[in-house]
Length: 338
Image (spheres, rainbow, N blue to C red):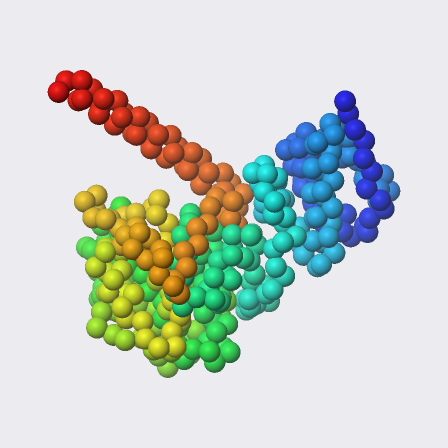
């Protein structure tokens, strides 16, 4: 049985925001929820089965309210609203806080865009050490950088220290010409890019010359004690157990630490266990340390990136299940033979 439901007259600007250019947003909602949505002079009519119509009404109503708050409705928000519905989440896109962490040099606000990101930002505020673990595009490093810059400008810390292990992603770069700094700079480029975007090149270079902002390979942290600093360790999945322990024991008074990593993208030798994996097992119950796991649902890059991450997650899950099944079969065969 098909149901027709009408939303009352809506503000034309909010309606335009939700529909998107060439109605691309509303077409995606129609396709995903299997409904027909028609605009009749600012009054929406939604046609489909009862459950689908109810879901579509709630989704559009939430998006309209989001638009009324001054948000631009983009493809990422549409995809996220759909993903919340698909996983039957009790959360709503309206639950995402409106708090702005800071603004980029171009004036664009930096704020959490998913419930996972909001949880991550709240954990950074409340804990001395936070591990942000998740796939590419979930904003782990960018949000941590925004929090660090905000704290630095507010005088909460005296300096910012950004570091990551200098590990080749399947490529050998040691033969390249240049001194040590020119060899490690390519590994630190993502950190520079985020700093330029949020802080501006001139402000960054000025503070870097004063020693107030430091971007360095993880090896440079050995033997130091880092007081009154905001410290971010990026690409932590490429640390060894010894490196992770070394880094975490550098922390001094008045400091805050964010460790980010993607445990599905390790570039370590096969026989080396990731320091991030061990840290999750060893420190998960230590007070003052929080572990936040982001997923493909929290990807805020191009929607295709979210699909790529999800496809790899599904593929790796199938491999794990197959491996476990094979091990179980082999174990039973060995018992029979003995």
